[in-house]
Length: 393
Image (cartoon, rainbow, N blue to C red; front, side, top):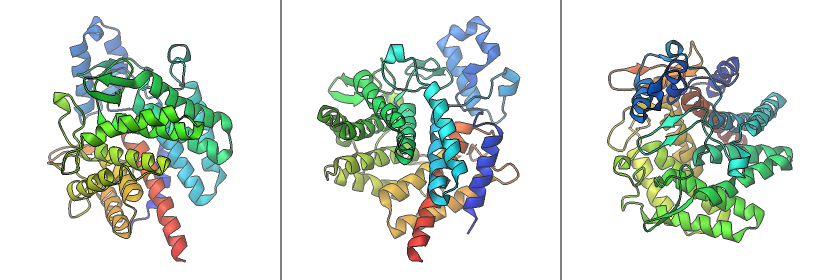
């Protein structure tokens, strides 16, 4: 067995050396050069520029003058990972660093005058085919991951101010992202858009239900359940979900399926209700059957193992141990973690590879997409493993 504790400590050191800042697959629009030209105003130029930055195995960002920055979602994942290491070791350094990063996250909330409640967005402009999102505009996924991290830290340290901020994020989701379009009710990815994406809507539902229970707000809980039922209704007979409702969202991938299942499990745990049991069982059976090869490689798509991506491995750890949690699931998780290290770990750098395709390996160091997920998932795995071993002894 590979020493995953040492690997994750080395990974944390490499992240600390950059002060938790770095590049991102989607940050090319932060280019000082592009922003100085009128080309930046053209949405197709923005889309192509972003995709070149994302797909190129050569890091063009230094040449294009894209600065290294902290990403709120990435920092939220680092906080969660640090708390896992603190719980496993009891060493104060992890807790202290988590508190310092949480203080930074509080300074990064999206404009409170505009949004009225706690919420977070990315540190870069983001051009998708469906919409354009300027830097700082809040999105549901970043808001959920940051809120969860702050709530966990606030609960651990009895800091009510952090708990209040985290729960307030559900008010933003409920008031600014709840959408009724066509015959659907869901939480939108960003304010003002009507693209229906299952993982985003389900994470919003999970957090609103959790916050609603904490706040004694039955209306918030009922809205969250209504939203979750929409995605449950659209689960395919084989247990799968496509990414979303739009024509270019008709793909099925592993880590978003894992998001869906983890969110539904939090919702079930929050409400102490069996309503979602069958959906979770069916979805999890599909997930385990579809998204792993015999040797433990996490498949990206239901019909293609490529690109091999640390994000897929990382979410697999959470899905297998939180949604599954049997001895068989742990055995598979052990195999998945070992395979991730074999394929993607760079021991000389203490970091993980971004992606491997059939022909090319992209070794660009992406802080939020790759290293934050690798660190958080492995810290969770190490703590889970330590507790299993302690229980045996």
